[in-house]
Structure formats: structure tokens, C-alpha cells
Amino acid sequence: MSARDSHTPDEAVSFGFREVPKTEKARLVRGVFDRSARRYDLMNDLMSLGVHRAWKAMTIAKANPQPGEMLIDVAGGTGDLARAFVDAAEKARARRGGDSARAVVADINEAMLNAGRARGDDARLAWTVADAEALPFPNASADCVTIAFGIRNVTNRDRALAEMRRVLKPMGRFLCLEFSRPTSRPLERVYDAWSFNAIPALGELVAKDRDSYQYLVESIRRFPHQQAFAEEVRAAGFSNVGVTNYSGGIAALHTGWAV
Image 1 (cartoon, one colour):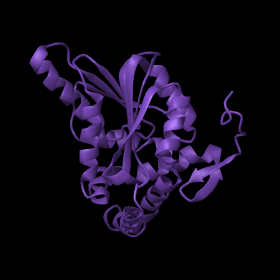
Image 2 (cartoon, rainbow, N blue to C red):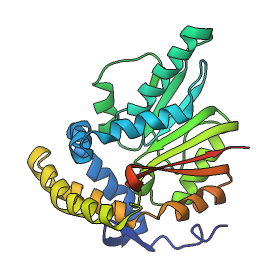
Image 3 (cartoon, rainbow, N blue to C red):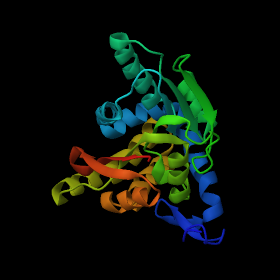
Image 4 (cartoon, rainbow, N blue to C red):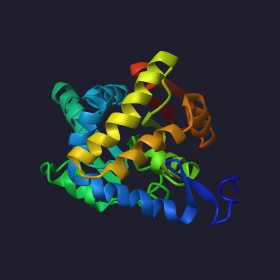
């Protein structure tokens, strides 16, 4: 039993800058995304000034999708990564043949999945309501697992990482894109000013929901720094763990292999 598993259900965990009972965090996070689902994609563009698209494109390039592969996109929301994965695999398939890649968008929040489905049907995609800590997929069923901007919202990261390791085939790839710590103090000051002032204001103006975006800003600050989270990934059993900073560490891509 791990140290985290031995904790009592009443243990306090972070929900932004607040401490809440461990049993309450999933419900509170679900409420944030219930409220933000309708404007989620627009707000991502506004909050990151569109840069999140470049971060996701670099993540997919690192994933190197191939024909016939299966992706599980955990906390996949509206399906950005899943769509990009199957599209990239289709380009490879056009060059050398094979079957189409497939992807499952797995998210605990049905409102987010519905927003993704509303963007258009794609026979290569499946949409599944699923908890990252208890994925409803067989062992060794995926060639690649991705999670983008979702791991910091999970109550028990060790359980979620273990589940993502479990569903990967031997030599399967794990890629986790998450907000992180700027690597220079001047950039950190600019980033803090933008985050704490502009993002909640944008949430209030565009999504009519300041509180959810205040939580999102705070949750980034409570997430471990790059090397600390890399240690968690190693502890989950991944090998060749790596970290690549994007935009001076505002975001970071964590990678590993299942062996």
C-alpha cells in the first residue's frame, strides 16, 4: 500500500488554494468543468493567447502516431489531442498503408464530452465517461496514453498514473502535458500577473464564471514542479521518463514508456 493509499478518506487535499476533504475534490472539480464546458475551447484560446495549440501540436509530434494504433486520451475533454492523433496517423497511413488509428476520449465530465461531440462526429473516435483513477479499459490495451491539462485536477495522482501505466501495452508511450513552473523569475512575474488578473476576469466576461477560472489558476500553483512530478511518473513504473519545457516552463511535457 502506498503512502497516499494509506490516508484516511477525511484527509484534506488542495482545491486551488483551499483545503477540502479528499472525498469532496472530484465533485468540486466536476462542477468547475460542468460550468466551463460550453466555453472551454474559446477560453483556452484566450487564456493562452492561442499558444496551447502549439503545445498540443508538439505533444502529438512527440507521440508519433502510427496507423492501426489505439490512443486513450485521459481527461480528454473536447477531444483536441485525440483528433490530432488520429489525423497524424492517417497521414502516415497514406504513405505506407495499414489500418486507421483509433482513439478513446475518456473524461469524468459528461458535459465536456458532449461539447466535444458537438464539434462533429468521427468514426475513429469513441467517447467514454471515465474516472482517471479507475479506467474502464483492459490491461495492455493502448499503444499510447495522453493527458493534457488534466492530471492536476485528479485527487489521487498516484492511482491515475498507475491506471495509465496499466492500460498501456509493453513499450507503449505516456505523454502528459501540464502547466508547470516558469524557468526564469522575470517570466514568472509576468505569468503571475497575467494569470491572477486577466484569466479570472476573462472567465467572468466570456464564460460568466469567475470562480472556476480562479480555481484553474490556483490549481496550477499547487501542482508539483517539473522534476517533482517526473519522480511521481517514475514511481508509477514508467521508464525513460523525460521532461520538455514549453514557453519557458509555463507548460511542460512529461513522457515515459511502459516496459
